[in-house]
Amino acid sequence: DAGVTQSPTHLIKTRGQHVTLRCSPISGHKSVSWYQQVLGQGPQFIFQYYEKEERGRGNFPDRFSARQFPNYSSELNVNALLLGDSALYLCASSPGPIGGTGELFFGEGSRLTVL
Amino acid sequence: GNSVTQMEGPVTLSEEAFLTINCTYTATGYPSLFWYVQYPGEGLQLLLKATKADDKGSNKGFEATYRKETTSFHLEKGSVQVSDSAVYFCALRNQGAQKLVFGQGTRLTINP
Image (cartoon, rainbow over all chains, first blue to last red; front, top):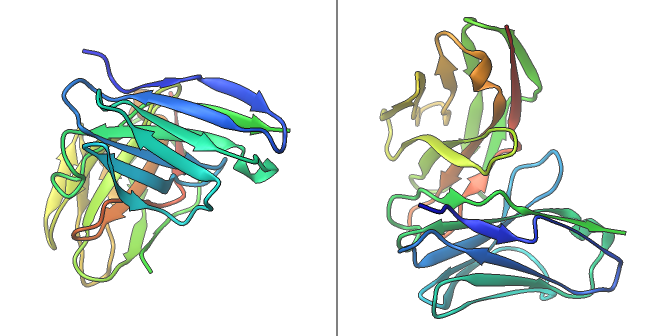
């Protein structure tokens, strides 16, 4: 069975540009979460979606937005990119809201470099 | 607020050595605690978890005990292997919360 898939795996943007990252959850999983992992740090929570509704938002500026589609895939959008947005962006899925087992299944991430 | 602190890495050991990676946390209420592992070129995966005080999580020879009195969840393994080389993350989730709070990670390298 396919795990969580993310695209693109690597990308380079310049300051001020916009980026869209995509995530397909494990089949049957209805919840998707996004995390930002800056080099040398642990992942930081950005968003969680369940059944196409936002269920949680971390401490990130409004330049960050996300949505979940009817097939439960998700997009993370970041506008007006800053150098500090350079990071590994992780998508994770779970069968239901994270309030259940608490286990998340992570993809390998999209590495964004902002020049 | 909620936070997780891990021992700083990197940690380098010889094969068959005893491993301890320290993790302490600050949280309101009664969080669930987790260890995630990230092998080279792979996504994070759950290694073990504990949901209440004095619970012991275990998997693949690794163990960690939820110690409420010391707010700790240290990861241990009696005899490490080269294949255990990875980055290990301690994390917590508060009751009712939608997010995991991660520590900064500890890079472990095991030499043959």
